[in-house]
Length: 228
Image 1 (cartoon, rainbow, N blue to C red):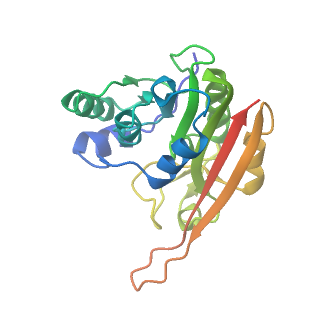
Image 2 (spheres, rainbow, N blue to C red; image 1 turned 90 degrees about the horizontal axis):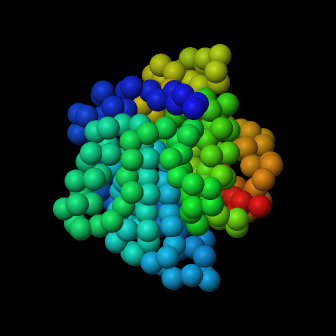
């Protein structure tokens, strides 16, 4: 079993302290699920997995829409919160605390996979292993939404680059207080899906903040890849 380099800040200083308890899904995830869901099966038979699901706000949306959902996160507080919410709203979901470098699901289990800025929290080498695990659990033709931060993000220049490729001790930009992060170039994102995938879309989003209180530009990647 490979060890996940989970930054304890997410459990100790964020989720256990009632922070980042998002209630609603991210718009990009909603668009992805409905744009790329398989059209040859009913929604009720379509399986969706999210890596680093946190409090499962994205899976909450999918479950309410009738999809079968599963999620994994290394934070016990996040998963406990997610399970309580699902139970309170009588929603079904396989929500587990664990390691997304060693997913506890069988090969070819899911139609869609979601990474909403969770794999950016681990090193480039670990991220490659995680993407291989996503490919394993996706059905042939399954589609993966992978969202991470760009090297052009202001926070990428305002931290300390470590030997494993992550940037830590970030002191500025919009990404302070969330532990170490991997910031990627276009070539690195393309390389991540070079084998065993068809890269369907690779978008670079740059938000230029011109407000008086600006803390720097926000830049991210949104990749959509199909398992071949």
